[in-house]
Amino acid sequence: MDTLSEKVTLIVISCAFLITIAIGIVILVLIHQKKQIQFVYDKNLIKAAFDKELLSTQLEIQEQTLKNISQEIHDNIGQVLSLAKLNINTMSGASPVLLEGKISDSKHLISKAIQDLRDLSRSLNTDYVIDMGLLRSVEYELELIKRAGTIETALKTEGKPYRLEQQQELILFRIVQEILHNIIKHAKATLIDVYVQFEPERFSLTVSDNGIGFDASKLDAADYSGFGLGIRNMHNRAKMIGTDFTLTSTLGKGVTVSLNLPITNTGKLN
Image (cartoon, rainbow, N blue to C red; front, top):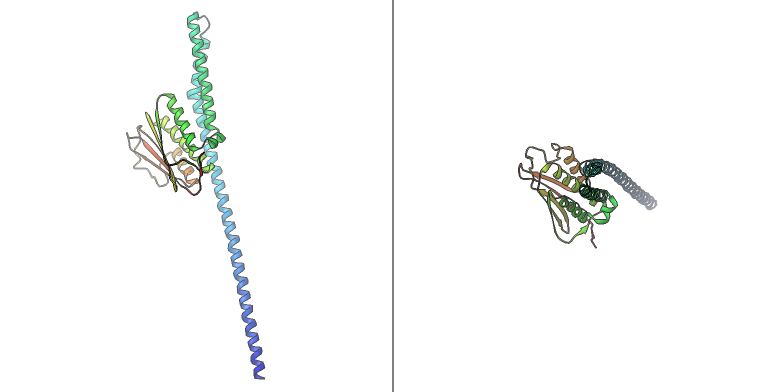
């Protein structure tokens, strides 16, 4: 009788142990599933926040691009066409020799305006930038500046060139465009140097000029809160794609802007 009781007790204990283990396994599975669901939820939240910030950045870039287009048309193309119009308006009653010169000048001015419009369109075309790649797009921008005849430009590369992600290349190019625009507008520089390094684990691009510079020692470089809106926007755009943005300047010795991006995946240029 005692033996039977012991057997029943043992069976009960074994069943209870197995049930406890089963409950424990179920709890662990539920906890794991909950963590997975929470992970997916957090990941989706992060992605949604990133997409929202990326959209905001793209809108800022588009707004700045429209301002640049307006200024480019007003300062360059508009003036060229105004000169052409002036020549045409003064043709009436001009002597044959003078008339021939005005016609020749007008053709030259109109041709220049057409070429400037083509250059502007190409520079602002996202598909064209993506197709050319960051390096060639920057090189093209420098050629346009050099062609204007007031600022010399130089481009130096180190390492074997490779392509970055399309979004990274596009935002980096727009940042470089903004830097170059600021140099032309404010720096009173005669030389722009661009240095690009292609390293296996890091991509870096540095733009420097020999302009008037400014005293940046009293400004907060941690988040660039003391700088103007344009510089803060560039800093935020760089941060969006995981790029470190550094600006240094000394009064009378120009400005240097450095962009450094850790590399995780690249494709080689053809």
